[in-house]
Amino acid sequence: MTPIAPLITSFMREHMPQQRGYSPHSCETYAYSFRLLFAFAARRLHTRPSLLQLEQIDAEMVLAFLNHIEHDRGNGPATRNLRLAAIKSFMRYVEFRHPGALEQIARIDAIPGKRHDQKLIRHLTMDEVRAVLDTPDVTTRLGLRDRAMLHLCFAGGLRVSELVGLTLENVTLQPGPSILVFGKGRRERRLPLWKETARDLRAWLAVRGRPPATELFVNAQGAAMTRAGFEYILEKHAKTAAARCPTLIGRTLSPHLLRHSCAVLMLQATRDIRKVALWLGHADIRTTEVYLRMDPSEKLEAVEAVLPPALRRGRFKAPDALIASLMADARTVPI
Picture 1 (spheres, one colour):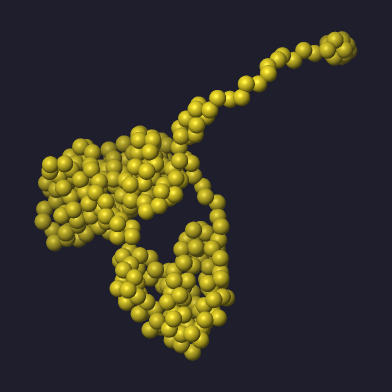
Picture 2 (cartoon, rainbow, N blue to C red):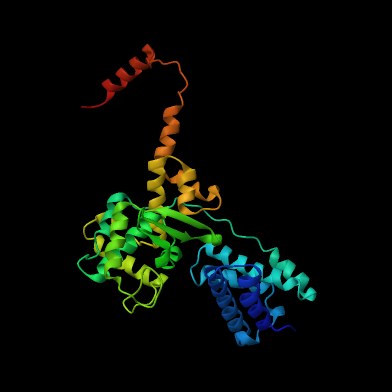
């Protein structure tokens, strides 16, 4: 039996950050997947997570875990596939260190990802975005911060990790307002800012003060804003905005919804999917093509650009026998 604790420790502390160069956000996502897996296996085997053995995490256990997160935790197929990908990555790391587990690892690697429906991405209209951005009280310090955060998240199409991780040194307001963003895959991109967005950032920087955190946005205690903190702020202002914008009633707003809304606006303005991909920081333009499916104006242009086939036209003329039978039927109907 092979203890799994030393393997997962070296995988998370050495292999991922040092040998593969994974970002802290990726390491955090993987760690959460393993935390769920080991907690489930420990309950199933009536032991502690630190005492789990590699041989106990077999294909049957992995399949039971995937079924658990779908039916008991209510996760969707996309989340299921994400957890499975983390497990397979760890097993590929293990197979070079424990050849005796090759058959077990091959069975896990053979577990397929689950296909699922790909629904259209939801987004906000400009009126809905405006209602959310107008909600913070800009006469207060925290209101200025909230307006700047929400405005920058939407205007830049930023992921929440990119927003809360943005540092002061990566914000340029003179001569041309712009920000330097570190996105997925350690890819950098520089985004120009709208004048209105730059104005809100200047207003926040004027009252931000000098807390110890180097991040642009900080919480009430002066520490760096967290993902959960921003999600709470967005949810709070979304509920207030629903009072003036009825279409927001009952809707759950997420930071990624603001990113989707920015993408749709950019696509409608530029008509160029490549520019949208550059703005969002997508490594593959196929990821951006999802916005083409949700924008009806793109399909309308295709319909208008193609001439419909010229078809022979005519009018239906009822034969005399049909008219006579209808008249006869009409005379037999009692008045």
